[in-house]
Image 1 (tube, rainbow, N blue to C red):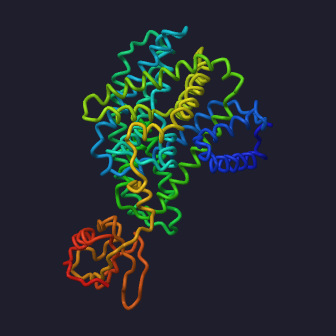
Image 2: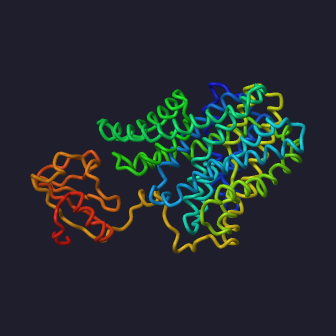
Image 3: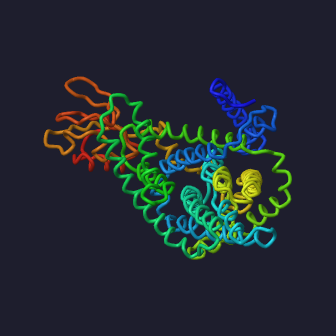
Length: 493
């Protein structure tokens, strides 16, 4: 069956529906959801029972880049700065040095055991060098796995920030493969340019996005997530246009916005959480359709050897070198090494050699696909077991909530206060989103002119308003008083 305008919606919706049903039951058998999505795509492909013919790497690459934007931005929104601050340098080291040494290790190994040139081997190593944000985010969260001593924020920070390094290495080594006379040292200035411009613009665009979201006055609340999507793609495309790394900028702008007070933040985060899952499904379905199983079978042997080397040698060496500057127990380093999940991102990067016309492009693509699939199956199914074996897992009763879980939950508030806003109060004339209200407290209601108003982030505080404030504890209520510059002598309601 070929995909046409007439049947694309029917086919797409059926594949989505089947994938969701498959994912719902997958963990009963210990199979990662992403493997099920990929399997549905393969079965629906030209060599599967669906018979859908799809052989367009360019479209697959476009879908991959768009999907990765949503996944990285959503991951950034869900990143709590307070939780990653103690491990930010570990994460940066893993996402740069860790990726580099993993790529060099795999590339040299491939060169040694195959007829690949050294640069072709390094290109393959670069493609599979990063952990996959979609795989790590989805598997850690769907398994509800809690880890000791900042391990989880370290892993999520690494997976969310190391794709830019892998992307850079892929493009750099691809350029050398196509132009062998080019010196390998010529990629260093390009690396500095991509990282510096991408990091700087990610922060600058993040601040600008906050201003736009909070200052613009939209007539419909449902337009705020649409605005956020538009801003996300502007960040990516503008950063790429200016010579920076767009993936890095999108992730950093997401991290910045996720830790700021935004109008309709709850709606935006809910929307992106759902869109990230949708993009993961679409991405894996698309890549599954692109794969020909008959072409994978001949590379199973070499693919398995490379996969074993990557999992048990190259990744551990990269982790141990990149974490050698920091104090961390060895069993925690080994667990970081084990959570080196490869997923859809390496497969997306493997489409670049296909489109560039590299001689061994098909061979590289099929090896990368097998390595990614085996990584998700081997490592993804054993994360909980290995965590318990290495004694890095937390008991169920002390599992912390993620920022999204905390923000979106209807947690109990134990303290209620009525706070009168005097005409001289600094909050008068400001919108709620602009007064720096503590995140663990909410304004449940505003009494104004003998009427009760349900507040929003856009609601302006007026003189003589009485705010009905709910807080989790007295300390948070103290921060409420400080934000409003009022004294805390009000009685509990």
